[in-house]
Image 1 (cartoon, rainbow, N blue to C red):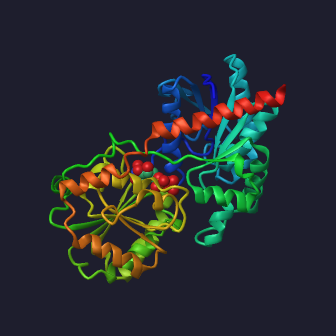
Image 2: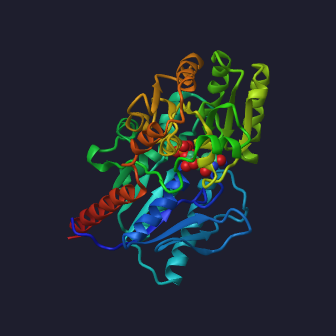
Image 3: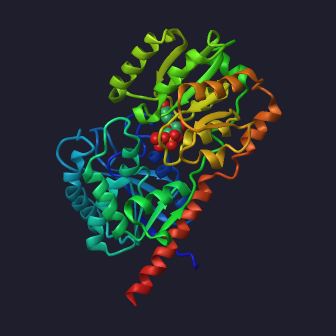
Length: 410
Ligand code: UDP
């Protein structure tokens, strides 16, 4: 396939790619957009990432990496619009993207949309641009609803995802399971779906001496269990709390929960109450948001990182923990099977029931986790996951989509 340098419009409307990671709507998708935009830029593409103005303190156009820009445009007058209500403002956002394009005399070769809301905006834009449209849903409403945990996803989302699958050129998923899900739930054609795993940045996520990391975080002498991520019921943190009383050595162990902002306050309060009811309040600390460049201290200080989610479309946290040399206990969702491939790297549990989680957490807490050769083995077990590879896969899909498009136009 010949390589052409492209001008790519990436849409990430509802969540700012440079927003605070671990807050309600900002997590793995934002990391994906930042890293993939930067790596596509390094390959020679010019990437403009469009997001919605969500507070008064923003730069309309800023650099986001090599050859990649972040463009904030308004959608609706109010800065704070509920995610679902944003759907009605997408035509406004699309008008603003088109005005920006004309004003700057730009011509985009392809649209790459993230999440269903951006997918819808991408489809509206494409009525005018007639270019290939590639979508990544990140999570799917129909799949989320099968778990019946937390608020159900509205029919509008599910119908829109189904329609977008029918109308777009390619759907990218991060795992084979997600590929099967988009075929099963939304009728995607198998050849229309490309599986491209996510990556990890090994320069950020590197092992730090465990003792030094524990000292820095004031955790000297304690066994540490770590959970990292956005705080929402689907992440299954509740199940880790319920697992703690089943641990034989609960006395010395501390559970650290990283993530969650103001908007996650009610869920964090619920989890705090549960910890008190379980009489483990003193062993659990909710740390709120931690920046990625600080996270390696937490991953390295931890003896085990737990990913108890009911659903993940990939699950970057497990990958980041392994890249820091810390073993993981994860539910059998997302990419768990492809990234946890030996007992040295941790365990996959069939579900997040407290006794299953406790059994595997106890195993990992009881083994010495500061052996340098084991840390190095764990880290190298995920060395094939890089953002450059992810961007390479995305580039191939973009080139194919463009070639298909030209064939159709002939
Ligand atoms: N994260 C962070 N600080 C926090 C909480 C989370 O930087 O306080 C990052 C974490 O490093 C990871 C991402 O947020 O890169 C969460 O991605 P994941 O795929 O695990 O979950 P998602 O947000 O996609 O559901």
